Length: 262
Image (cartoon, rainbow, N blue to C red; front, side, top):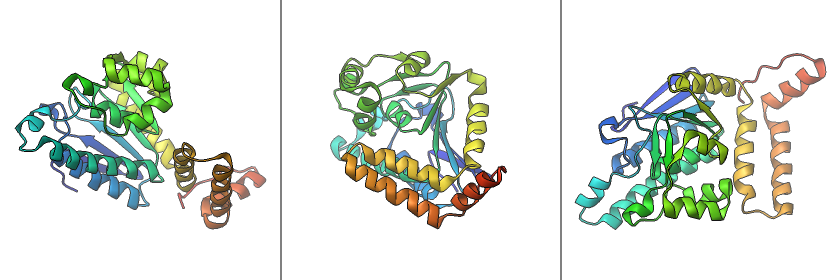
């Protein structure tokens, strides 16, 4: 698959998506929005993909929006509407696909870059990574789902502080706030992300997908509604997936199970 602003590689059951505008600090423009949505659709629809890594080329993860492109646009508001529509659709696909999403943050994640990083099911940060919301620094409000994820990770008061003050967080700061899962040496980032992806890709992919969707839906559910969703999900997995049948049989036989992702 060929893209203008990113690369896509699949090795076995692991797909790796790499933002690739390194000369522009991987800043987000309309083309990247289109590319990310296209690759998210592929990852969500291809059942042979059982784990996804999202990372970036060069020294920075993503500097946010392409502010130079914003300034040159005839109608900046409509350009931003078009970009966010595609970015938000891509995030929705990644959130609801079965395959776990691992975001490997290799450098500065600012603005939309920080927003995207927050969407990972697992977020691994290189020791040199930094995080800042940045939006209000140019008079804009956040996008990329950060107003959904950040308050749920750090609470509404801290989220507003980070969004208004644009504090720059080190990787260790982000870890202490629960924004990332793990901080690793720079030169080990992709090795560790790939090891995790391969481990997840060998797991019960359909069950992972239900975990992701149940957690996402829980934020807008009553207790009774959420428990009904849990009932439907576990029953459908039990009756409709080879992995559940094999997992239960292997448990009874005290044997190691091999999940097929189906």
